[in-house]
Length: 279
Image 1 (cartoon, rainbow, N blue to C red):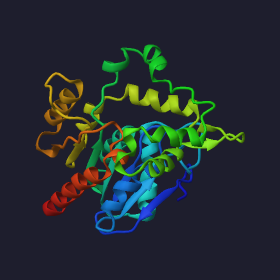
Image 2: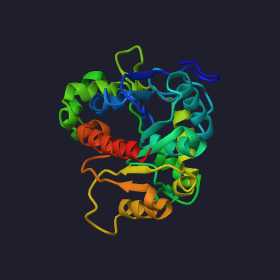
Image 3: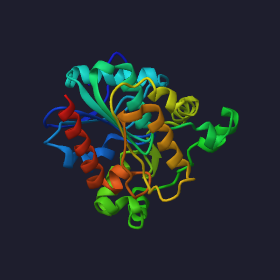
């Protein structure tokens, strides 16, 4: 799909209304939604987007701030599904989903934030970017091969939602072949760090205070201890959004759309039914 900036790649699963605009996390790709999307369609159309710099989309050097990324997505939605939709995101994509909902209130029926969105990264990484930059820099993965990644998936909890081969193929969408049989991240480190800084500087709670639609949070883990940072984050999100917030925990690791796709899809489908009942 061409925009006034990059051309973006979209994995389109046909289905009913409202459509779901599905967004992946930092350094990830649209295939993160393959498994959950297969459950959600054909009841709902699922438009999984490779955000700029990721997957099969173009890789501009700049423009990774939230306003510009949301602008890309609004053009994609206008081209493919101009009617009001639900925007769902994982990790960084959850923050993008909230930014989209705040920027286009008349076009968004609801937002879904999977293990993300309720963020204040200064509490985790330090008070300044100079401190946080070192911790938020991605690991060096030079020398990894596709076979090594497949072998790693044999023991990874991420593969529990499908099988190691399927999970590996989804994960391989994050990489390119460097021409020597080794993999390198598709997202260049310079652009990775641009996004990391915008995330660091974002106050997710201030952002969600600008969102008018219902918001579903799907945090990974279990609220079994009242002092965990994630439990407090959900409490703070509910305080900001009031009755518009819904929180459903799913026990698993961060990458819930791949590890727990059926559970994620079921929770989203229930949220979609509630939204339809409110229209």
